[in-house]
Amino acid sequence: MYNVLIAEDSKPILRNIKGLVESSGLPVRVVATAANGEEALAAFGLHAIDIMLTDIRMPKMDGLALIDQAKKLHPKLKAVLISGYNDFEYTRKAINLQVNDYLLKPVEKSQLTEVMKNLLAQLAEEQDHSLSGFHEILDRDAVREWRPGPEFYREPKIFFVIRKQPFAAAMPVSGTPFEAAVPDAAIPSWALPTIERDQLLLIADASWLKRSESSADLIEDVRSRLLDDGAQASLVGCLTPTEWTQIPEKYREAARLLDDRQLVFKPVALDFALYRDDPEPSFEEVDRLGGAFAAMIEQMNKDRFMLMLSEQVAKWKRGNVRFAELKRFVRSIESAFESLLEEGDGADAAGMHKRREDLFGRPSYEEFGSGLLEWAEECFSRVKSSNRKSGDELFEQMDGYLRTNLYSSVSIPDLVRLFHVSPSYISRIIKRFSGKTFVHYYTEMKINEACKLMETKPEMKIREIAEALCFADQHYFSKVFKERVGVSPLEYKMSRTGRSDTE
Image 1: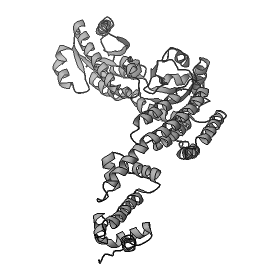
Image 2: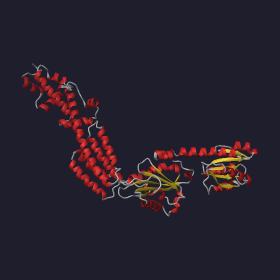
Image 3: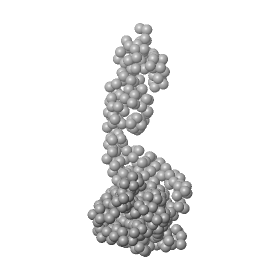
Image 4: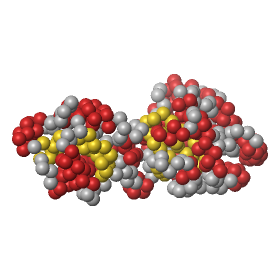
């Protein structure tokens, strides 16, 4: 219901307008009346007013002055001027952006109803537009169905971000335990599902604060009520009275705070005002741990990895590990496995990622632990299979291409363009199957070809062979040849053919 204030110094006219408003059938109620502008202005300290109907001529403070002062208290107030016929031209000239409409005395029901409908439509449109910030944080279906009444927009709000504990039963979206969390039904409150799985936003009027001696008491009371009603959840309370338009931004900050500090085995209850400026908890220890496990993956030391992982799962259960640390560790070993997958194995990487995400939705930590070990086993198998399957084939293709292009100058970027893989992957494959770097391997092919040319075409001069095989100059060719063969090109040619370059 929208709240209406009527300011009119004529009692009969006041009674008539009030009766017309109350009999209109519209979602409005008259919460205050006043005989002059000063009384009307005082009513704003007692009531949340959405619409004000005011006579233009009143003692102590006229209607225009009242609207000016009331708008300073409530900028979104909808104001309607009431005037007699003699004042109509004055009223029309006085209407500016602060006045939404006017009524001519004697006020008729049809006229008043039309004006009120227009004002209600304006209020609804403004409120729906202002809810756009909530569209980004609330579940799509929930925000589509959510139609908060005018009481949502009047008073400052406090709110809680409530998140299901890891590996606990799912929380209901509405009803208990959230009805239990707000003990007084007279306190307007809204429990809303967010876009984050297993996370809810509980909003209530700031008047709730008056029921507790301190913020800490209120947060503890909510935590206890949730636990008593069977909801295993952590929460962060934002108990500084906040305009509803600012809630989406503060919600994100509060959710990040919960991201950083939620424990796996013990629900936490945080006061946003106390923690928001604290430094973020460090991930140094878990990063060091992840690095040690990544090294075992790189070495494909499966047996030691699986033993250490089993011990670590048991160790976490005995401590206060943060959920963010658990996720960070699992992501780090996933990255280590992905780095060993052969390029082009996107399906394997996607399969790893989905299985990893599913781990955190397990109904218990024990099932998470066993699932983590199974997942790691599967990752080792995927990497081994991927390496064996695609590495051999790609190496054979690159080797064949290099052998048919000994009389050209092939570089790693050329192979990248031809085989659509990264430079690092090409280097890794050639190193794995040849034991040599790309440059060493390709150069050795060219030197072997040079030896064949000296033996089969002794009439070719060393300079001609160097140029044919795309060496920069004869001097560089001779240097490389001697490093690979142990003798100079001339010595090799003489030993094989008995001919020198001068013959």
